[in-house]
Length: 409
Image 1 (cartoon, rainbow, N blue to C red):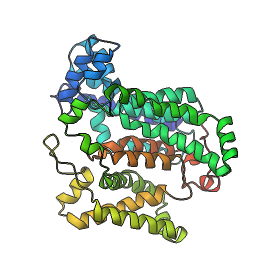
Image 2 (image 1 turned 180 degrees about the vertical axis):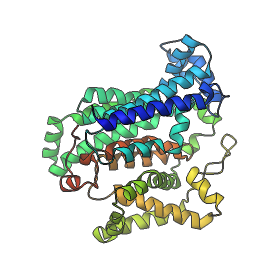
Image 3 (image 1 turned 135 degrees about the horizontal axis):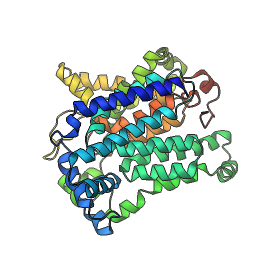
């Protein structure tokens, strides 16, 4: 048995037991979204397999698997927030077990990656309260594991389940599809060869089906979520028609702060950032130009309406505002941090992690509001992939052989 994995498991068991008792066995009062998530779970409880009418009428923006599971718990244990929090807690522990026991047998970055995930501020919150995020993250990580192990039928089902927890999880199977097809394109730019290679290796097809799992929900609701709930939360048709580039910049900031900067510091790869402008001058200039345009024409600022009145984009924004940094100075800092994320993931060494960042960041431009938590799933995926040399673009062997598709376990 791998000693690192065994020790990590023991540590996590002790940590979770301690948290359970520190949180008064999850009997504390309802917290934020739990005020409407609990009634939704109760609403699902009479129907273990929900009817079409139920799926049309439940009062949430998110796809329903977390509420279906919550309904099962309510039907077994009654209308208890404690039982629902335990459900979330168990999924969180299961996610960490997936993370630990599917890591490479030897990885110099194991503890860094595990610590990076655990120290993300929202990971604790979505683990101890009945929130929907941890369910989506569990299925995303399981889907990534299945993909790396080449069990593609399972990867398809698991990613589809993630989409049925949170709609924007479709970014992950979409990233796999793009990565697979782009690998075929790198082998030959001739259309006939690309089509032949893609037909012979149909990995991309499994994950295309997972992407399409969003379609039944769009058809059912005649939009990305139930229209009545979108109106209640001021996420109306005018908002759908818009695209918020400021949210893209802030999502990149979150990835830089919570993943890229600690990754580069603790792996002693910080020099990569300083070499990038001379290695890829045209790409660097393009990044600077794009971010300058975003800062000037679409600066990052939080949505503000009767439903959502918190003024900050997230914890990073709150920190800067608390220490007196605002206005154009804050936007420039955002731009510099976003530049760090762009340099890290968007270079000729474009890999699976890069595609995941691209799709997640692009989708967040259509988000209802900005929040650090929305980038937690992709940061989880980045820390997991960073344990594998074959999937980590800063590893020497990955730089020498960027076409490697699947990690070695």
